[in-house]
Image 1: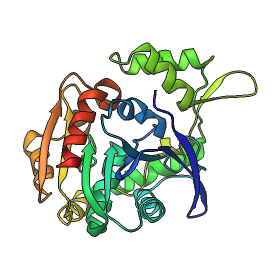
Image 2: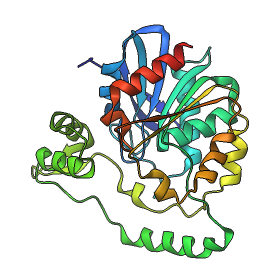
Image 3: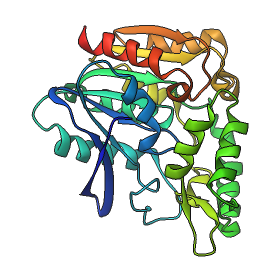
Image 4: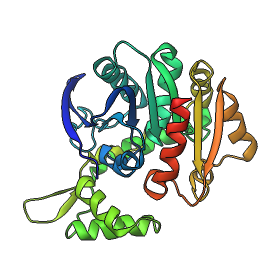
Length: 289
């Protein structure tokens, strides 16, 4: 297993944790994890890389070893702003290679349209936007948000790290036990009474009161100048959850000027856990082209 080091930066008032796998600085990529995930989740992908890549992966605000946000919910614009500051620290002088999964892919795609000159190449792993919404949904959404703010619910505790590993395998039957136990140690933290809680802010579970505006996201995507590798997984349920038809899915891909579309076989939504070797080959080939 390739060793990593932990770096800490001040980012917009939060102490941000960045996991760094040192390598050739001329071959650098920045990995952005998804919702309810952490930077260590990319370990299997990094181990599968054949080249001597210099890899950075932050824990988003409210996840892993990064500070929790200072409000009671989380917003896409904050992730975009955090990424802007992080790139100033990690790669200030040249365009960056961004690889984002799920939430991280959504943030990376938005950012690449807002700051097109800052991105050399973009790899989007199952980060295809959110479900369509209509303005008429706003009153109900605001009401749900207010209700959830009053509930103040936390994460359920697990008896130990083994129990958390069991849960990860139940959620993803393709996940090997060794990998599940590794992830459990990074996704969870031990409490004073010996139980294990997820290492994240429960506020991530609170619904966002602002509706997802697909038209605005697509306008950002249309400004992306970098080549894009758009990767989905053959056994993922992401499109069903988003309620997208094949035509709507194709419309989202068409928003990008230069896009290569690939499906990884034998993988679910967490394709960097299920098929890290195949994914590493795709990413390296694309970034080195």
